[in-house]
Image 1 (cartoon, rainbow, N blue to C red):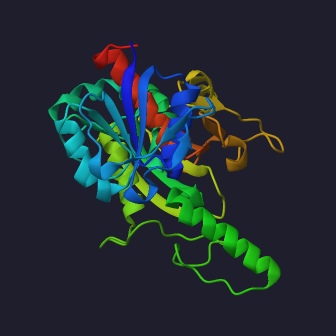
Image 2 (cartoon, one colour):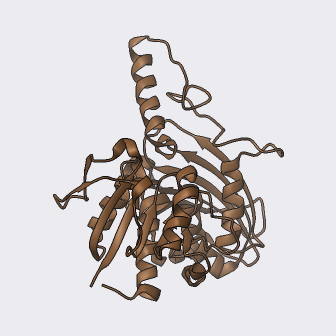
Image 3 (cartoon, rainbow, N blue to C red):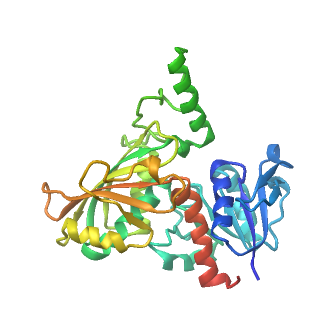
Length: 341
């Protein structure tokens, strides 16, 4: 016996990826519903590569009664309206937006890192999926933290335009084409030209000069891993379509060598170590697209602090940073609580 699953925001980048991954991982579904805004109602969307077509249902009229799990990829606005409705109708919500992540009675889950925290979902019937850049980072950091206890993290991100949705991807494409043919370039989705440029600004600015994206990485890492870890983040948008990269510097309480870290990461769940100290012996965003792993390269000791390491981390932000993590949460929920399939 399988589950009845709804994917809310099914026509967007992340929603489509959720459908792909549910099919790819053969998640035990007796029924799958594609749900989206009224403008998408009645259109058809493929369920992964199964050949099965799903007719999109209108979120405004959708009844979650009898559904076991709803994967939300609809943004904070619709989620604020419809997630509590789904939860009240007995459906467990796994939400990809930032709306519920820092609510104290809602678990924020990365299954490789803090699976036990999922047990708290019963308080509100909602589970939060972390920010894309946080998700891949904590997968890489948790096994090292267990070994030598991380005191401080300094991270600079190189985030692809797909993190800003279809509009971000379209803008990079249109600007790149315009530059090649000599047409004027006008920013719309981003604050400055993104083609052949980098923008040190993701989300809104806060009073302390950081951006909300940077704040998310700080507070989410503390909630998922350990509140005592100090985190400093600089988040940058780069002209890459899919795949986030991160340069991470770590300071530990206990001694840990680069070789020890490599051995740990080689065996860590969700991690793939590709770290050859030669030309091309590392992973870049282009190579991680469509893959589920969090890739780690360039592991080396940082001589500027006691017990320091530096590393490079790359992952497909539409997968581990969003859709895959949500499906993994659903799998974890099934194993521990729902007991079907």
